[in-house]
Length: 337
Image 1: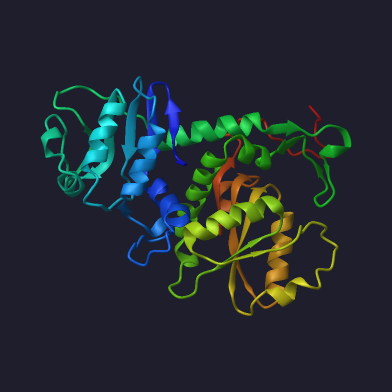
Image 2: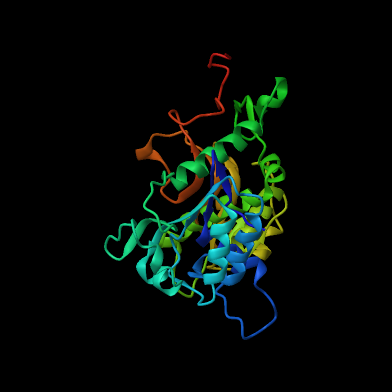
C-alpha cells in the first residue's frame, strides 16, 4: 500500500518521506529488534520496503512518467540500486526531485548525472536517463491540493430545510462537508492528508517541547479515526471522548480522564465556527489540563488573517478566495440565496 500516489496527466507522483513515514508507523513492525526504523514523520532514511511498495504500485505504468520526491529524505539504505533500476523499466521515464548528491552517490546512480544540474549539493530535478532531454516539472503541493479539492467537492452535500440550522451556533449552514465520505472514497490518500496534518503540527514550535509531548484530544468518530493515525505519525498519545456537542451539557466524567498539567491538542475533521473547540478547551482547562490549540483537516476561515487563531492549523482552508464548494454561513438577516 502507498498513500501519496497522485496521477496527473501522464505523470505519477510519490512523496517518499510520506511513504517512509507510513512504512515506519504501520508496516515495519516485524518484531525483530535488529530492524531499527524510526517511526512516524521523524524517519528520514528511505528503506527497501518503502521503495518496493512503490515498485508494486507502478505495475502497468509503462505509459506514465514517475516522479519521486525526496524532500525530507536524508539517507537511503545501501541495497536500493536494483529496485531503482527496475523502476526505470516500469515507466516511460523516472525522475527524482529534491534529492542530494550524496543520495545519488549512495544509490550508485552517478552515470545518470549527464544533463542534470547540481546546485549547492542537490538536484532540484534528476532525470534517470543517459540522454539529455527535458522533463516537465509539476508542483507537488499543487497536485495534492488539486486532488484534495476534487474529493472535497464530490463529498460536499446540501443541507436542505431544517437540516441547515445549527443548534450549537445560531446560524444556517447550507453545506455539509462529509469527511467520512472522503475517507471511504480514498482511504489511502486520506492517510496522506493526515501525514500533511502531522507535518504542520510538528512545525508549530510552541507545541513541541522535548520530554513533554502533547496529548491528542478528539471528540467524535471522525476525530478519533484521524487521531489514531496522527498519533502514530507524531508518536504522541491520544484521548478519545464520546461525542461532545451540546454547549449546555455537563460532562461530569471527562475530568477523570484528563491528566493534571498535561498539554492537549484538540483534533477535528472540520472547524467552522469553533463551538465544539471552545467546549473542549473549557473541559480541558477546567479539569486541570492545558489546552494548546487545535488542528483539523478543513477549516472555514470566518475571520480576517490578523484576527485568526494563531494556535490553529489545518490541511485545507476555505476562504473568500478559496471556496470551491461555495460554502456559506447564513442568518435570518442574510439573503438566503
